[in-house]
Each structure stands twice: as C-alpha cells, then as structure tokens.
Image (tube, rainbow, N blue to C red; front, side, top):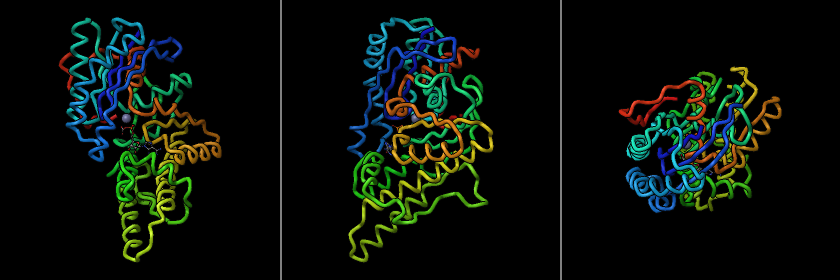
Length: 338
Ligand code: KG4
Ligand code: ZN
C-alpha cells in the first residue's frame, strides 16, 4: 500500500509518499517540500495570506515532483492534514487532495497534523511503542500520550499563550536578530552562560497545571532585562541572554516531559517539531532521559519540521488500524484537538 501525504498547515507545502510495511513501519519513497520561509522572513514572521498564496503556487508542482521521485503515478490512498493550523493554508492542501482523490478514485483520509509529528519517527527508529511526545515548533507546544499510533492520542497539556518556537522568534526580534529566531539564538547561546540570568520558568508552581506551558512571562522578562541594560547605558550581553533564555525554555519543556513519562509509566520520549533542532532542548532531554533510563527518539531535523511524509506515515498507520476513509465533504479545522 502506497500512501501519499499532503501537508499545508503552516508555511511548508509538503508532499510525501510512503509504502506501508506490515511490521508497523513505512518506507520513504518521496519527500518533497516547498517552503515560503524566505518570503515570510521579509515580514518577520508567518503571514497567513502569504502562506496560503505560496501553497497555491507550490502544491501542484510539489505533487508532481513527489510522484516522479517515487515513480508512483497513482497512490493507493491520500492522507491530508485537516488541522490544526492556519485556516487559509489548510484549505489549499485539502482542496488539492480532494481534486486528486476524485480524479484517481482513491480513498481520502483526514489526518491530524500533531499525530504526524509522532508517527514520522517510525521511518528511522522502527515501530512506535507507548510513549510521551513533546512537540515544539513555531505553531505548537504539546505534550501527548501515545499508546498506539492507530488509536486516539491523548493530549496531556499545551501552551496557554505562545508556542515555544514563537518565544524564540519573539526574543530574537527584541534582540534585533531577525527571523526565524531559533537557529540564531541557538548559535549565540554557545558563547553565553546559561546561568548568567535567572529567567522565570513559567507554570512550574505547585498549583499550576502540570503539563501546560506558558512562555509569554519569560519573553516579558527578557524584554525587561534588555530595557534595564539600555536604561543603565550598559551593553546587552546578547550571548548570555540567549543562553539563559534557551536554558529556561529547555528546562521547562524537558522537566514537564519527564514528569509525564513518570506519571504515564511509559519508557519512551519522542521529540518532534522544528524547535527540537535546538541543541539545548536535545541535550537536556538526552541527559534527563539517560538519568531516568528512558529511551529518547528524535527524528532527523528534516523530518522534525513540517513535511508531507509525516502525514503519509500517520495516514498509513491509521489505514492499517482500520480507519474509515473520509467523506469528500470533509472540512478543515484550524483548532483541531489531537
Ligand atoms: O516546525 P517548524 O519548521 O514550523 C512550524 O512552526 O510549524 O518550526 C519552526 C520554528 C520557528 O519558530 C523557529 O524559530 C524554531 O522552530 N526553530 C528553533 C531552532 N530551529 C528552528 N528554535 C530553537 N532552536 C533552534 N535551533
Ligand atoms: Zn508542525
């Protein structure tokens, strides 16, 4: 069974094709992504209308490239992201999927983007075992409890304000570092002291929801610190600010993930989303997993960012698990829960 996945929830137009293997894994046949990130950089962030237009231009050529790369004229099924994500962006992928489904007479499967971030790890690291997944990107911050990929996934917590990647982008902007901010902060932090400034760890008090996150207070604390330097006529120690901010984010994310591991009783942590490229999030997750005897699974960076392969892989798991095809009237849901 060859499954095509279509992803257009944010600023990447992704089309992937995988072959389902009966052992609970998939083989990658094609992975084509067109990104509008360079265009978005001009605006300092993702502008929804710019993203929709870029998807509209890219979707058919990306689809063609994926079919050529895989040597697949017509897949056996199409899986498409219906949410969560940007409303206008999602519509482009879903409309394209419906057009191809109608032309090829193959089944359509409506897929949740978040499950795709977890499922994609099976391409490199084999069948998924019960796990906690920590998803961090510019658009989402989620802690999930996954029993089986073909069964409903349980959300343990999410952000109550900014996504973790968004916090990196906002802090980079107030330090005058450009967009996207994560990679620059990661680089600068290497020369800084992560304990130079004690920035707040949001929602870690005894009365806070144990698995929810908040990053807006941290962002404000960084802004106040920068202002205080400027008022005092001191140069902002950019590397120390970057390292201390990054440490605060990595600490909260991994601390809550380890608590979730402990309370759910699973023995595996999966990371996903573009911000898991962050070197400190990775190293702290590794340290804490090693200390607790937990297996850490992290897909390679290209598969952590949004792509069509993750949707194809998740779709294949759902189909193999007996999911029913979606009706051609299926719509998008920008706020789709997991
Ligand atoms: O998954 P992704 O490509 O797109 C979505 O947001 O869905 O993730 C992009 C986000 C941006 O916010 C970017 O700043 C962040 O991931 N990011 C990083 C790093 N690389 C990308 N954040 C921290 N450290 C990094 N090395
Ligand atoms: Zn994503």
